[in-house]
Picture: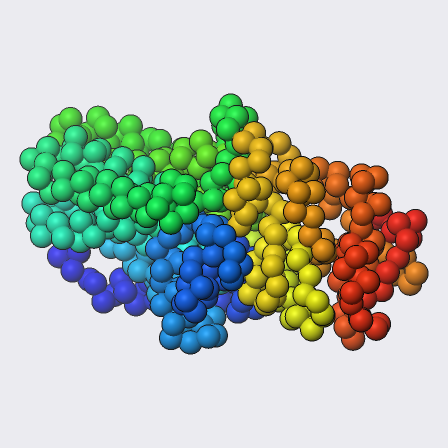
Length: 546
C-alpha cells in the first residue's frame, strides 16, 4: 500500500524542485536566463539546424558536432522551430526533467522501503532533506540549459524500471518503458551505451527469468548506438562527437590519473558525499549477500548501487572535467543519499517502540539542519565560480553584437565559444577545438588545461584569424591594455611568442561603457573605419595582471 501514494510523492517532488531551483538562484546571487557557455554552444547548433543551415557551428562552414548531447540538440531544434527566443521554454523543459528525476527517485525510495519491510516515511524525508541541501543539482539541472536534467531523468528512470523488474513480476508491465529508456540513453550522451548495457546485463544476472525483456533492452540500446554512430560517420565523418577528440587525451594513463583526482576531489570536497559512498559500499555488500538468500529488495538495491558506482567510475575513466560543482556527477545526485535514507528508515522502524525514539527524532532534526547548512554554505562559497559560467555568455553576446557592426566582419579566434556563436554573424574559429575538427585532431595527446588542451600553434598559424578575441578578459586601463597573464596558458604561450607579437596588434574594442580586449592583424585593421570603436596599443603598453 505504501507504493500507491503517487500524488503525495509528486507534490513533494514538485516542492523540492521549485524550492531547490529557487535556492540555487538565490544563493548564487541571481542567475540570468541565458544558460552557461557550453549550453550556448549546443543552442547555436540547434538554431542552425532549425534555420536550415545544417548541423554546423559556422553557417556555411564545416559539419562538426561540438555538442555531446545528440538528443538534447534535437529537442532544442524543436524549441527553436517554435520560437527564435526559446530561453524560458528551455529552462521550463529542464525544470520538468528535473522534476521527473526527483519524483522517480522518491518512488524508488518508497518501493525499496516496501520491499525491505521498513517504514518509507523516514526514507522519503531524509531523501528530501538531502535534495534540498544540494542546490548544485538544481543549478546544473534547471538553470544551465545543459542536457544534465534529461540525462539524470533517463538514468534514474532506467534504474527504477530495472529495480521493479528484478524484484517484482509486475515489473514486466513496464517492458515498453524499459525499451524506450534503453533506446534513448545512448542518444543523450555517448557513455549512455555503457550505462544502459551495464545496468541491463546486471539485471539479467540478477533475474535471468526475464531474459526476453532484458535481452530486447540490450538490443535496443545497441541498435540506438549503432544508428547514431552510423549517422555521425555519414554526416561528420567521425564515430564520436568532436568534443571527444578535443577533450579526451590518447594518453590513457594521464587521463585516468586526472579522472581519479576528479573523483577524489568530489569525494573529499562535496559535503557528505564520502559518507553517502561509504554507506553505499556497505549497502551493496549487504545486498550481494542477501541476494543469494533471495531477500526482497536486495537485487533492486544492487541495481541502484551499480548506477551510482558506475557513473562515478565512468567519468573517472574519461578524465573528469573542470566545471564547478563536479558537473559529471550531478546526474546521480538524487541517488547518492538513497542508501543513507533507507538506513535511517530501517533504524527508525526498529526503534519505533523504543524509549529512545524521542531523542532520536531530535537528533535527526539537528542532523537535517546541519546537512542543509553545510550544503547551502558550500554552494554559496562557490557562487563566484558559478556566476562566471554565465558571465562568459553575457560577454560573448555583448561582444558578438558589437562586432556585427564592424566592416569588414573579421574571422575571429576565440576561447569561450558559446555566447559569441549565438550573436556573431562572421566566421568563428574555436581555438580550443570543441567546434573545429582540424584543431581537435591536431594533438591526440592533451597536455595542459583539463578539457581545453587541444590548442595547436601550427594549426593556428595555418588559419591565422583576423582577430583573436579575448572578450572574457580585463580591458584597457588608461593608456595601457590590462591582461591576465594566465590567459596565455590555454594557448601554449602564444601571446608571448615573438611571431605572434609581430603579426598581431593589441587592441581594445570600445562601445560606450563596454570594453573588450583582443589582438588584430594590421591588414584587417587597415580595412576598417572604426573611429573610436577600436583602440590600438603597442606591445610595451600591455600590462600583465598576475
